Length: 329
Image (cartoon, rainbow, N blue to C red; front, top):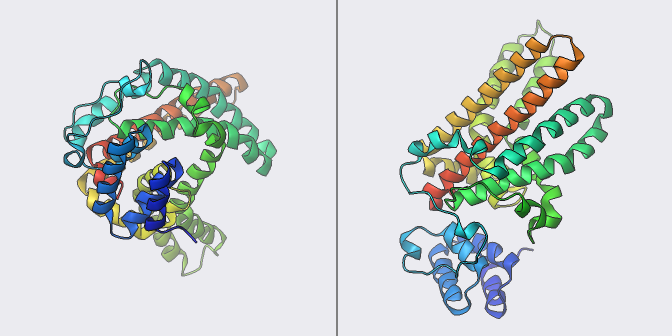
């Protein structure tokens, strides 16, 4: 049984356990004790300091709630020295997102690495079947870990893209980045499993059956719902656990709270995904049946696909930066 927020608070009074910090915030919020939790965390930070406590305060609190609270002393290197974006209406930040994959050396490096990885896994998957998924997990886990870092640091308002070394050598990600592929997969399943079920029913149904148009309608509705739910699913796995996207009621509450800004994110996801698919189809059409051209098309498609992911994760993180309390409640 999960510990209550009172038990976790007592644990934090004894020692600043980073794992307990996030668990305490979630438990207190679920119990309707958000304001009490904010006061306790501010008190804890005032008594002990610590970057972990500050990071939680900065992520979970609104600007007025942490006004006057001094951040930890800056080190000589690290993301805490990076410039921060000016807070302004969320849609006005989206034009800058388009250049994000090319705005820093680390993002460009990840693009260069992503192309061959995506190409290689797409070529191996048909031959390896289910085993191919095991091959993809660590490779895509590395790519997804960086995408998750993009969301987290964008939610802090960082101008620069995350440093690649934080993916490989941070205390958190060094041992767990292999699981990030599974977290990304759970967000995808939570959003699109109804679509998969209805499409399977359509494909196995007799073409002349009277229920076929109904199944098509249900499949289209499930697909539309999945597209709307997908960004919030990603948000929930980045800042929560792998099973959080399956809490549909919580996702709906956050979507309603975000309102128009969330609609803008959904539109941005749809536009970038459509552009990526159009490029992939066009590249394969140009390549034709020539094997060498097909490999070049796969490589280019891998780069464009990952660039689209970087833009989407940047947009999702900036949404959290502008609407911090709504996106994390």
